[in-house]
Length: 414
Image (cartoon, rainbow, N blue to C red; front, side):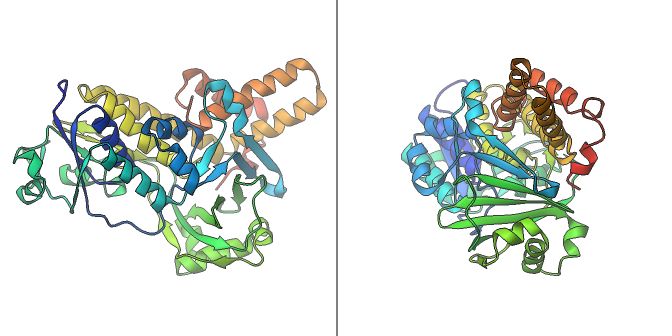
């Protein structure tokens, strides 16, 4: 892949596939996206992190995204007893990130990514691509699919990319196993009117539930509300996704108080099988991007950034797929670790104790310590330093039981 003019085919037109197509087209690579055009009305991943903004700028589409989205100044967590911990994105200025992000209606956001790839010269074939195994670890486009891209002149692409998301087409065809995380959650979410507006405007609120957690993501004209919990706990709330979501909202005092006059204005979407990473992310003439490579968890909203970042990394490592795979694995592992601190309650115990310490010892040293760790955690949770060895080590030490006592279990998300 060291020479320009080589051919790449992205199987799937999700965010990672079309972003890769845009980046390669900008470099003059002949790239084709095979996508059947079928997408649900509701797609998880409506809240972006600040690290995604530089990618939007690189693609030249930030203004378009700003026009259809809502400015996101930060994230708040509501804890047992209604205590609220606020994360302000202004803290990430110290790690050279924009001090904001966006909340976006996903179908329109995805359309912007699609349109940009076409503008930059990527070709698109609206079809469900058929692939065939070529030996034990190789793949090739089926002849019928190949014929629908006449510009390839009947030749197989030099690189096939799996951008089929959770369908994980290549893994299924090649029987590639995956490693799964400890969570066995299900998410139900929908769009509502009649909820109180989040404060400040655009702020995402993540709430603690007795058996899981919930999100409130402001979108233009509506609010995305979702609950995440263990499948057994969710089943106790009702038979249908609609019953489970409504009962979860009604039984939580914070959610119920925020939406006494709520009205659901969309279907209820359901997502399962979080925390999965493919045992292999590349092979001879093929690679995986986005969720096809691995997906971690909706907590902290890393999914879209990982999808677009995987496209960036692959576009930079076409001649060294092993290096691409290693860098993606580091990112996925770092995010899994980061998220585990939230589920265990350690991150909240650290903040709770830190706030107490600052109140008791109001001097410059305590202020600087608090600012330093606020910045580290913010930069890690926003995508800038998630894989930083220093940040990961510091967070592990300062959120440990030895430092903060026995408080973490009471703040854990079961």
